[in-house]
Amino acid sequence: MAKKVLKWLGISIGSFVLLLLVAYAFIYFKTESRINKRYTVAVQKIAVTQDSAALVQGAHLVQIKGCRDCHGADLGGKVFLDDPQLGRIVAANLTQGKGGIMREYTKADLTRALKHGVRKDGKSALLMPSYEYNSLTVEDLGALMSYIKSLRPIDRELPKHEIKPLLRVLTAFDKFPLLPAEKIDHRKQSLQTVNSEISANYGQYIAVGCVGCHRENYKGGEPLVPGSPVVPNITKTGNIGKWTEAEFINTLRTGKTPEGKQMDPRNMPWTMTKEFSDTEIKSVYLFLKNLPAEG
Ligand code: HEC
Ligand code: HEC
Image (cartoon, rainbow, N blue to C red; front, side):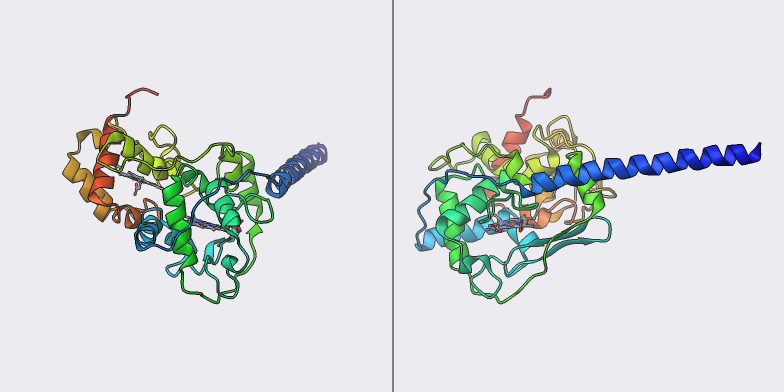
């Protein structure tokens, strides 16, 4: 009798393991084909000047878009994620030094990477949040590119990406933004410019950078990666509804909320939002406060 039970138990466990293997094989091939998909995009022409106003604006954009959080303080690239379960994701060296992409990237290649999240080889850039830069104006894209071209060369050769099983599983269930090119409307034309006076409209332009974490409707949701905090609702139905403009500004500049929570910049990137100008931060506040309660 006991023998029979054991035999059945053995068969059940065996079939379960087999099922898991089959499921993982499916996930592996599915994610592999998404990772290797090649995109052909018609790249819009962006003027790149070396005038000082463009360089100043480019430097500011690098601050408020958090490029350094991933590409390193000198933008010479770094290993951005290194985790035994997830794997290794490396943010490119953006300079003309050894190992830098600007040794061979043309203006069109750079536009394709920034705006479309597509690398020179036609595949999706991994984890590079281009869906947040896709709506930048021609002026701002030009300013960013001018600034990148002016960077001091940094010699830094970086290791390759390595995608481990957990990252594949999260990608398969769309729980991890590994493949930005999938999320972008590649036909969208960039506007030339945006009115940069304090307004909800300008706030929306800036707040595109919050969507990747706080979601399309700014109402937050599940943690971004296992173990990180729940992403809060930042519309008026969340805490922000109770905050004054001054409290909002203070939160985005110090990472400390009026409720007394000190946020870790690795979760909520306030080291990036603290660089927002007064006009930018007030516009974001106006925009968030004026979002409809439902939806
Ligand atoms: C969340 C992290 C993150 C942020 C923020 C980020 N990047 Fe990236 N970026 C990456 C990673 C990772 C890659 C490498 C993609 C690859 O090799 O597939 C990359 C690649 C690139 C590339 C080259 C893509 C290619 O063709 O190989 C450029 C150019 C670039 N980033 C510019 C920027 C600029 C400019 C900013 C700020 C406006 C920025 N990135 C912000 C993570 C980030
Ligand atoms: C990389 C992901 C990420 C991005 C980008 C991001 N946030 Fe957050 N934000 C979070 C997380 C996670 C928390 C919760 C942190 C905690 O609980 O410690 C948070 C918390 C906040 C809070 C505190 C809310 C509360 O109720 O306590 C505010 C306000 C906020 N974010 C505003 C913004 C704005 C505005 C932007 C865009 C300009 C933005 N965030 C971009 C991840 C992000």
